[in-house]
Image (cartoon, rainbow, N blue to C red):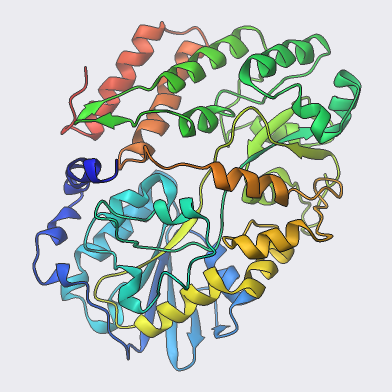
Length: 446
């Protein structure tokens, strides 16, 4: 499937100028050297910087913008994701890479799942073998984490320290009150498939609760489980699973099964509090610890133990961060050592889980911790790792395309007026298609 997407990917990246590198003979060699005095890392927040500070012994923090690895200065270029700022800044730097001074060249940059293909299917990213990483080095990583950054020619272009399989987290007290149990296995029977989930939503409403917070809470489950890509043979394609999400969300909005909130927007997260009326949310380990877990001004958790976790209607994943070596880097040794330590060292992987409540990209380490006494304070002493492991093995990226981020974001925003009754389904769909035409003029939109 990925090979068929090459032409589509290049067309999508062409608008940003990234495909120009693919036609440049010098740039396409895949060059990496050692001896650079400055190691430039491009990312969108401080998460990776804190991971290195806490778990990578070779890294020494100097300030919020600089660090050291031996005699090499590490410079952090952190640009927020909002309004595509990060990708714009990264694109500009990569386009200038060939002629940049040695100390200014991009050495390593981070990408997310929604737009990884945009970068890995160009010559701006290096085969991990180029910096000295072998298949045997990474044999214990979850397959999908490598599929996400494998280009159309089957070349692996990045590595991640984390996996992002998701679970359904639910309010234990609401479960006890409405369902008569908060046991994860028993609650799973009330959400085991979408028909059952929808029926439970009616039960929650009758008891005075909302099943989910807003319009977008189940979107990624449906989109991850689509059986066809957003773009087929150069044409926009709306999978049946996306239409199922639209139908469900319209039903939930009409029947008051949700609070009509928008992901990350005002009121969306009120269900995480003790007084919240929302039964469940969906997300991976990072979502549980960084989003659902509420903290006071001193950083102390205020809602530990209110939630538990179960599998939910379908397996899916959300997010993830990958390290990509930039073509032309002069810090190949530092990149290799960093990638190996952060994505293959079992002790580092365990440390990430224990300190950061993340799910690490190492099968043996996670299986060992799943069988151990590891527990989550947020989940009231439950060990969610077995569920994450089971979910990670089921993830498929067969339908990933370079158009996913734009299409996923626009279908959600354009459908809100339909959910609220401000326009018809046909009008909302027409608005979505017009947005796609504007973003991706190379596509056929019917």
